[in-house]
Length: 292
Image 1: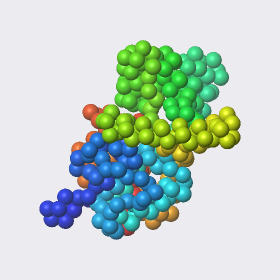
Image 2: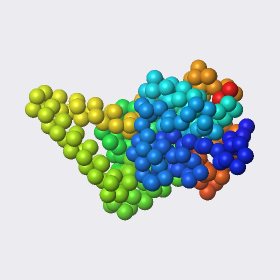
Image 3: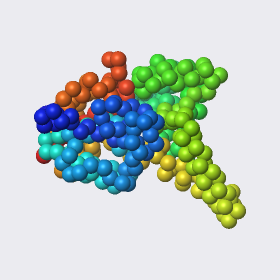
């Protein structure tokens, strides 16, 4: 299935919620752009394209950050914007694979396997932490700061090349490493100002709540603001539920694929899922679907 435009007109390819991974041949959208190549975009606003004007949509590790209702709305927006025959490609954390790995590791740990005992902590965090955390980084950040070096091979196998970055940060920051957030943060003066203003606004709001509601009220507001920040996972998908959702949203020919496969023309040349021959997000479920 082709994503090429007609004649000499280049195709309109949209990378939705791109974070720090984009390509100049794509229209790259994100709530917090980290480059001039990325446009400011909020899922609540829909996609800024006319009906049937887009040749391909791609979203990696975005859908799980939306509520089920908002995820459905976004997929309906993709269907509206895509031309007939165009491809939607999604990558999300694979709930089935994570659950199976958790049960496999749990069984070995209960049998006394010392390696599995170390792996159990990480796979439990991978399954639950971004669903339940109430502060940035959550328990994953604590683990990466204090225990990751003792389980480096397993973590690398689970989260891919990103692990090397975290392990380098441990050395550079004397034992402290960042958690694997969906979005990277820019260090430009404009971004710093934006984040400073947001932090000031939150400080004022939580301060007022503390005066009116006390310590518990302040904590509740802080957690609520964080939970709505976009860092947390709001849902998870397996191949069955994601296929159902895509079909309910009007897509056809829904199929699971690997990071190295795509119905999109030249998708591998954009290096969005595979970088230097390595899968960027090895814990992913990759699925594609066609706009009828």
